[in-house]
Amino acid sequence: MTASGLSSLTAFRNRVRTTTLAVPGVFNAFSARLVERAGFEAAYISGAGISAARALPDIGLLTMTEMAMETKQIAQAVDIPVFVDADTGYGEIHQVYRAVREFALVGAAGIQLEDQATTKRCGHLPGKVLIEKAAMCRKIAAAVEAKRDRDFLVIARTDARANEGLAGAIDRAKAYRAAGADAVFPEALESAEEFAQFAAALRDPTLILIANMTEWGKTPYLSVKDFAQLGYHLVLFPMTLFRMAARVMEEALQELVSQGTQRNLLERMQARQTLYEILRYQAYDEFEKRLHERQVSHEHERRE
Image (cartoon, rainbow, N blue to C red; front, side, top):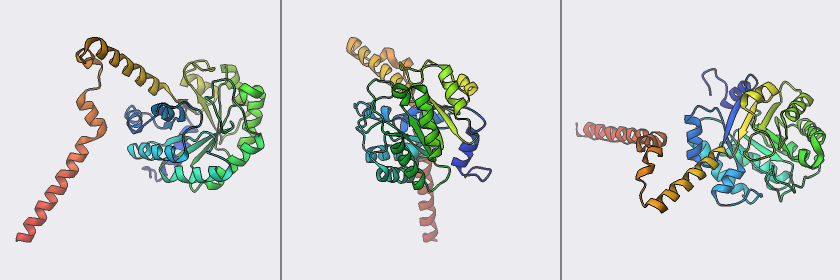
């Protein structure tokens, strides 16, 4: 509960009605802790990021169990809400229902479902195949039915822009909202004007609009401020942290190969003390100290 007595999910939903938030994608508990430490108010568990961290492409290879395990570790590491990319929902309506229950149980604040076929592809690549609009609406209805907390977000992503044009994406998004989606997410729009048209077509004071800002995709590099002006509430940066981390690791490895020492990398590294602060070493030390002092006190009382 927050200081005002609201649940954290309720407080978050109220917050996004009045502002536009950047939501970085995370790929493990440590990256989520960094996001929270930097002051962000939410994190997005990217399917692409989790897949890449396992040296897998983002084509629907992760199981629900694998994503739930990752989500549990991430949610336990932070106090901010975390939202999960559940791809196509791991099957049909029964699998979607179970996915919502499982992800909520391990601490997720919401789940994202997309309207691609099970053999999905990255949203900015060609060759995507969509399921029928009615089939996606059934999945959304199943997800809504599975909710135990009304503020748990069911996020509907549509990849229809590539196959059915902007009009098709808008038509699907309206249907997904009618089916009960709390938020809609148009993937791979190609201009600020398209984002503006999409938002205008889905005017709804209780609907959360989400934009996705991946790198080297079809969407131009718009800022959070740009999206605020366009009427969007959350702006995802799903792979930014992963790509930065991967590039720095490559550079460090090249230095080790060429120089045989990390000496020249020290100034670019995260300091040992900073790492300890992020990992909360002091809290563990204090816990151990309290237990020791309590034990000593009890032993002293027994002797008396």
